[in-house]
Image (cartoon, rainbow, N blue to C red; front, side, top):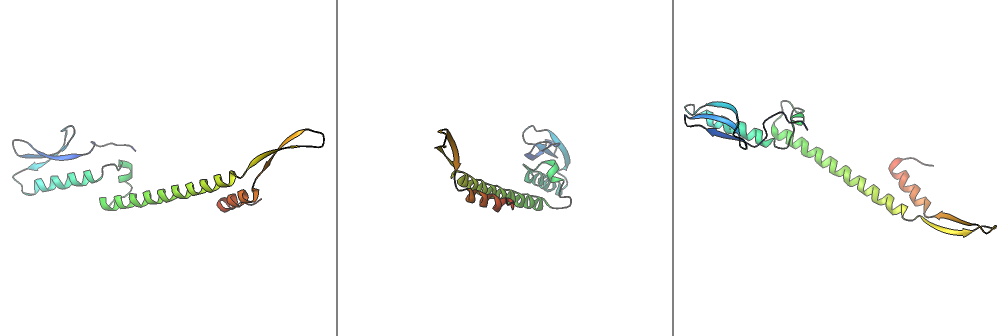
Length: 142
């Protein structure tokens, strides 16, 4: 995530002469002058600007630009939906891992002696179950 703007939170500040600024709350760096208190709408405009910017905390510039013309609420809503989709994918993958591990735990070894007296280690387990799980998730069959 590339950030190319002054970090949030932003705030509304007024100097001794009554000029209204939007500034970083952390550094007091003036981002822009909105106007003078002589204009009734200036303080309200400044608060609205700050509210919009602060609503975007945690949303990188690159992601914010993916939704031109949409409201901040729409951007956040879309990101929440994507987050829910990713959580579902994570949960599905974890279930697959758990099922595969359970199938693999059926594998064991046993040592047998062949007719020449040599010991041979053989694998045993529920190979059918393992194959079924693999087929379930990949669609591949032997």
